[in-house]
Image (cartoon, rainbow, N blue to C red; front, side, top):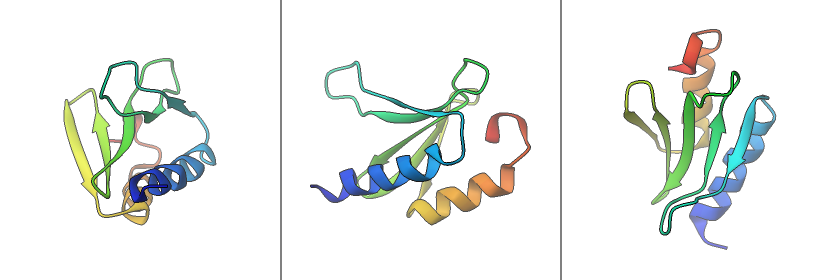
Length: 87
């Protein structure tokens, strides 16, 4: 299994434990699957693993936030806990 795949599985396990996260397979050829947070039915953040980095995409602001690993993502999320849209 590729390193990105292993990290993606670790990210998924951590996010699912937080609730409101779901796996979204890629529907576009060449696209990446994502873990999506959609507590109200609208995705507020999606997370992928790209070239060894964890990348959170924030649709409301159309921006990516890159992390060196899972710990960085979780710390970023913890800082924003309770803030609408986690971003």
